[in-house]
Image: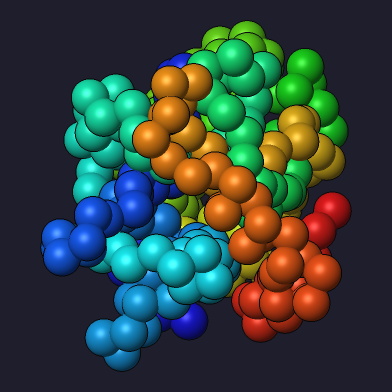
Length: 245
């Protein structure tokens, strides 16, 4: 899979609203992070992208996906309350959004180079290691919550994979799917790494701000429920070889 390569407000955000009659399709802003969204042979794909595409189609929505850097995404969401967003649901942002439909769930883990002797059996055991995270990601939020002493935030999973391979960080925090994509981006493999046990559960939701009164949330909830009942969501997850924890 070829990918064009996710503290309080969290990554992988998308923003959309239903257009007025005759208006141009609204933009859907989404952080560009494989395997959630990526480009393969000029075609956009992704385990979250395809769920959103189906949900919007079933709900009768037209939209245009426009990937943006995370900070610009946050600015869009803060400035336009009647938008929807794909957000990681964590205690740190629980009260900030309305949570519409779960799209993805996984575990956050520590990864180190295979053959290293670093103890990653728990967050406490790894507390003094140099830890790599993606800036603004749930990994960064969780690393700070768990009081890791040395946190280094970078712009991408690929950057963390490269820093880990070069020994510039001791461990990397992410979900396994993102770790695999980062490894692939630098020509590495999962066999080059050793993964620790879960340090936190994470879930990715379609959400909106507490003030999104102009959005028909019932339409999106109904589309998500239809996809769950008819197996469409499960088929998308299987297509990306994803198994929920």
